[in-house]
Length: 170
Ligand code: AR6
Image (tube, rainbow, N blue to C red; front, side):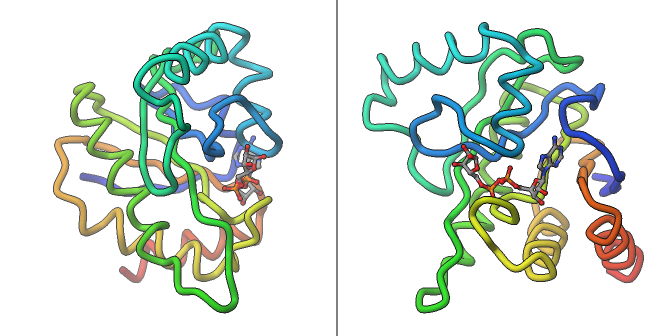
């Protein structure tokens, strides 16, 4: 697996699967989630509602991942995962790592060759950006996967620089 990073918008990635930094409801929100639903159109929300009416009646637990259509996005699937909210008193790192691992397992089941990830939990969920980069890079590198390219998509120039340097030295 080749780990790359780009400065850009997750909704513009031409890949087999893009990962959504969702919440447990799967019914939309701000940040990446808002952008994916806005650009991907109503088909994604309809697929999420079907999941909620089916085996995910209680919502998607933190750290887990599930796939839907990508609607009108230039990708085939959206893999929704729920990152942990940052906590100063509880170590939720393992849940954050699970998001990357479980998303890649879903990608493997879909036979996706390339997957684009946002920096999960690093926005609305307030995870410190430098550690979010560290967890993303180390966890993705350790994954045993048939995915050929994993692309980390960073939305801010300084975060992109952090990721680029971390990937180069890893
Ligand atoms: N493309 C790539 N990265 C982006 C984009 C984009 N279009 N927009 C924001 N980012 P966030 P979270 C960056 O908040 O912290 C939603 O309301 C952003 O700068 O999207 O896991 C959900 O419904 C940050 O670095 O996800 C949940 O309730 C990173 O993506 C909650 O937010 C993640 O920021 C999830 O919060």
